[in-house]
Image (cartoon, rainbow, N blue to C red; front, side, top):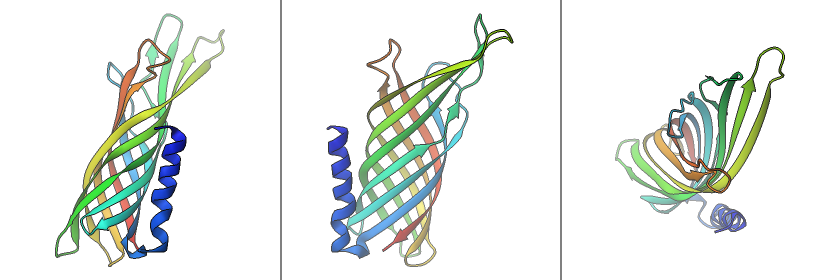
Length: 200
């Protein structure tokens, strides 16, 4: 599936239900505390990210959703080589398409899950710091591809329409820089998110 096809599908998922069954829609906005894991000896610092989901409930217990994930820059630990110090950073954004099953208790609580596919774009930047006689510099490279994600969480209905939610998620990007590097890697992001949803 091309990026253009994925974009058109996202637009259809977002727009088709608006004219008919508005009561079946929910918008979720979440702030994530996240951490990248690229394997090897990397040690990326925790960073922040945001997600926004549009959910359309086909049945009371399951919704299709489309969303967007945007992360802050995550910095690796500074390292030293023979000419100076260097540090890598990663930043990523994704279009998310999936399903959201849930179980709503008789009290104002519910548990839910998310599972789906993502189209991601990730940038790797390396900054080098030399001695005082050599200026510092940086270089970056960007890659795109397809991956998947899953998560589970709990929610509490403050009113009939407003819900607060807590969620654990994992976003996986396989074979990052597989076509541009001799050292591709699988990038995973674990996240704890706090969010608010509004049910139409």
